[in-house]
Length: 114
Image (cartoon, rainbow, N blue to C red; front, side, top):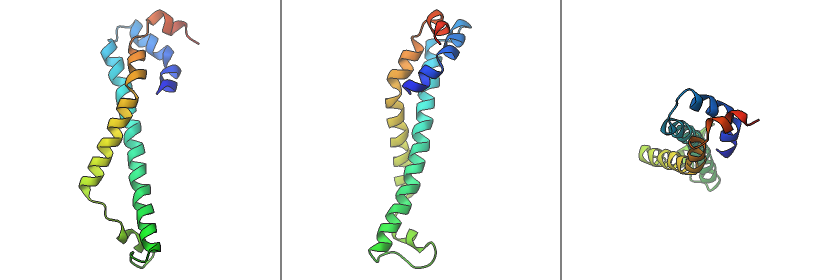
């Protein structure tokens, strides 16, 4: 998120120069961090399902067939929702400080930044 803020410093300056509130810039970067957490969480769930199924098939508890190794993995909808919620929350917590710094930039300094 620090890199994202640095890359978008000029755009932040333009937004602040035309009257965007600090709160709006903070929300933009927090939503960006949450979306990054969501995508990472979805990737983690997919890899976890395949990894769990593969390990259970190697242990002899999985089913047969071309995609049978997914039968050994037990993934409930509640587990997916909790995992995605945790990933989004972690992403947003990690993005709080960069988002706050982005919202506090002065328009003149942000526009001067190269």
